[in-house]
Image 1 (tube, rainbow, N blue to C red):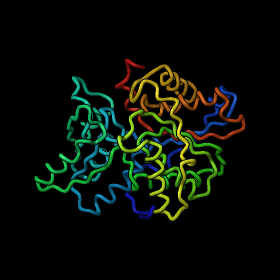
Image 2: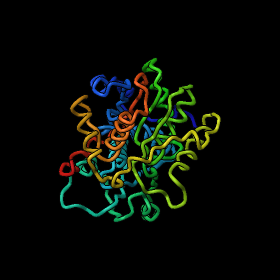
Image 3: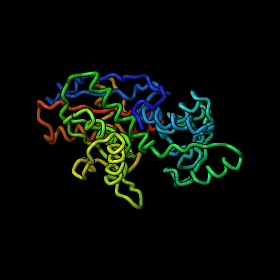
Image 4: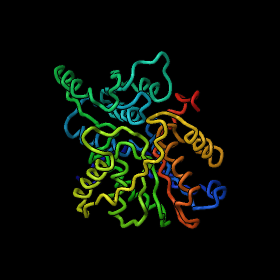
Amino acid sequence: MSLENRLELATLPTPLQPMQNLSDKLGGPELWIKRDDLTGLALGGNKTRKLEYMLFEALQQGADCIITAGAIQSNHCRQTAAAAAMLELECHLVLGGHEPGSCNGNLLLDKLLGAQIHWAGDHRKGEDIPLLVEKLQAQGKKPYVVPYGGSNLLGALGYANAVLELVKQSETRFTHIVFASASGGTHAGILAGARLVGLTAQVLGIRIDKLDAPDQPFADKVLKLANEVAADLALEAFSKEDVLLSEDYLGGGYAVIGDAERQAITTLAKNEAILLDPVYTGRAMAGLLDLINKGYFHADDKVLFWHTGGAPALFAYADAL
């Protein structure tokens, strides 16, 4: 694959901003934020970068409909629905849970964007997609499956490319890059991108979901995907030691909002007027703040928090927040 084989769905480059107020309040380290919540596709998020590569392939293959899966408030599904609408492709979303009595947050946007929603009960990671593919093919359609979270080689290339964007924006030598690590594609892509451009920053994912695939621990999944990207870009292979993953901030489990997430969301809103989401970036920021409080970083470190988006889900979690 080539990093050039992509559509232009996102508003790029996304802003790179210092978080001076928060840095001052905490007494160091120097904090920055990469605003991938502002990628521009139906309120933005990190999946847009991944979709640029995957939907390029979909069009090359002559697909006329797109299928993906996620939780009821999936940011990935919302951005996939938006991308499909831009490209005039039919979109099918396989969502975990059952249809709620009211519709808000990302689910509201899914419907406004014209997605056809299939409710899947306990299956929020695409377990029911093969049956839907067969059904659509029987109708004479040509479906293209975007994997859960957009986390495959093509999706990860979106974040290898994002690191190239980052180094063009600033000469700041970040010592750490911290982000929410959920389905693995963003994590693998940043690892590969950092190696591609020679960044020495420590790449640290904050894990947000306890649920592993039954056949593969999550860290192994990230490593496998990072090595697929490395092979594609002719880079040296990664080892287990290269995958830095904090599993100390899983809280009550996926999409369960606790005090740590509430405090992180409030802290960033009050100090930087930046909105996090309750499931991914809120949990990742909670981890970053705790690591700062525990002295994980030196006062003169330069830490980049990569904001992967998700703010529309705030409205669906109003009571919990």
